[in-house]
Image 1 (cartoon, rainbow, N blue to C red):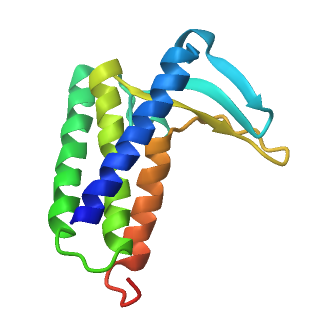
Image 2 (cartoon, rainbow, N blue to C red):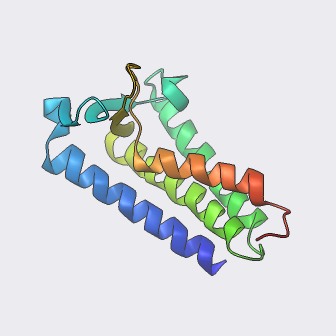
Amino acid sequence: MKRLWITAIAIFLVDRLTKLVVVEWLDLRSLADIEVVPPFLNFVMAWNRGVNFGIGASGSDLMRWGLIALAVVICTGVIWWFRRAEGWLVPVSAGMLVGGAIGNVWDRVQYGAVADFLNMSCCGIDNPYSFNVADVAIFVGALGLIFFTGKDAE
């Protein structure tokens, strides 16, 4: 359980720090985009009021608070489900998922939407979507839970 909490807190803090630096200090909110290493990495401001890729982005307060409640319920379930996990892969994976989800919940409370700003393109493919550190942690954590839960190689 300790690894889950340490990972969740670390992911949450890294997510908050990156958003503070990029969205606030570099003023991406106003600039809308900053070329970092074009075309591979750019900061492109996107406010996600829905779920993945903006699905369900009605912009309503009901949707906002509903998504906050859903994230809290899912985090509580993940913590409860993996509270006694052995090894280190499953607790770290669960912590990544929880830390990322709480990072995005914080955004919904603070901004009314999730602040996405990382945009990566490669090899002639122009990616129209932005994401954030929390999104990466949620994705990697979910994959870890799928691949490592119930395995002896923890």
